[in-house]
Length: 285
Image (cartoon, rainbow, N blue to C red; front, top):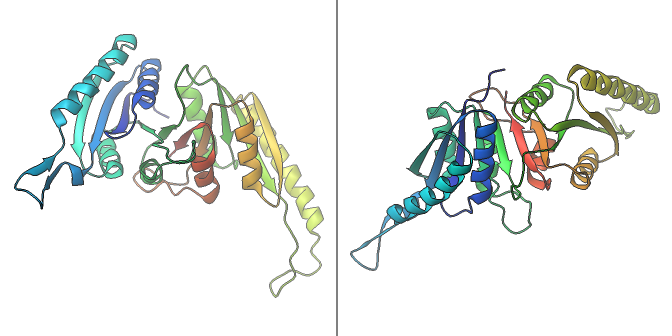
C-alpha cells in the first residue's frame, strides 16, 4: 500500500471552506504530502447571458481568488505544506472526480456541505464519495486536532482490512476500534423455505464465527478493541446508534469498488456516510 504523497482538497466556491481546508493542510503536513486545492465554479453562474439586458452575468473570479489566497496563506503559514490552487468550471462533483484523476491524487478531502439536519450529507459530497476512484475523506465537523479515535465498520472482507491498514498509515497517532453489527436470521414460512431448518442453531454458529473473525482481525491488525453488536433484526440501526453515541471523531468504511470504477457503496456504507455524526473516510481499493 503506497504512501499518500499527493492529496487533493475539493471546495465548492459557495460552501464554507475553513474546516475542510484546515483538515487537508493538517493531513498533508502529517503525511509530508503535496496539496492541490481545487475550487469548483458551477457552470450556470460562470458566464450566463442575461435575457433581460445585453450584459452577461458573470462570477467575480478575481475577487474569489483573492479570498481563497487569503484563507490559504493563513493556513500555509502554520502548516509548511507545498500547495497549488486551481479554479475549474463545471459541476462540483464532475470537477473534483476528474481533477483527482488528472492530478494523480492519492486521496481526496471534501466538505460534507451539509444542509438542513446538521450532520447529513449534501448531494455533491455523496456523489463524489460514490464515484471516486480513490479514498475520500468527508469533513463534517469543526477541526481542532488530529483524529484521536477511529471506528472501523467491518464485514471482515479484504476491503475492510485494507481500509484499516490505510487509516493506520495516514492517522498514525489515532486509536482504531473495529465494530461489526450481526443480524438475527428470522424464520419466514413460504414456498422457498427449507422446512425443518434449525435457525437458532444457525444463529449460534454465525455468532461464534463472527467472534472468531473479530478476534483474528484485532490481533492481525493490532487494533485497540473489537466489538460485535447484536443488531437483532436491524443491524444498520444498531451500528449507527453505537457510532453516534461513542466517543469517535472518524468513521471508516470500505467500498466494494475497484480503482477506476464507482465506489459501489452498499446500503450499510451509504447510511454510515449520510447519518453518522463523525467525519467519514471512504476507502476505495
